[in-house]
Image 1 (cartoon, one colour):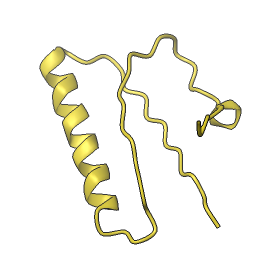
Image 2: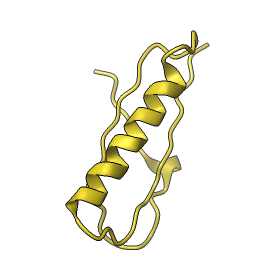
Image 3: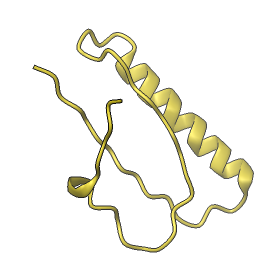
Length: 67
């Protein structure tokens, strides 16, 4: 059986680009450490993008393509 885990984090009001870079690296390192010895995880992807608006995304409505 295969499953997909989805996590959404929303950051607010970074002081500068250095703070954004620090948070992005810390998050990627944390995820990498979490999955590196997990025999059930066969892949992961990480992307941090700009977010507009204050409403959180509805992860139940997200669509994923496996093409």
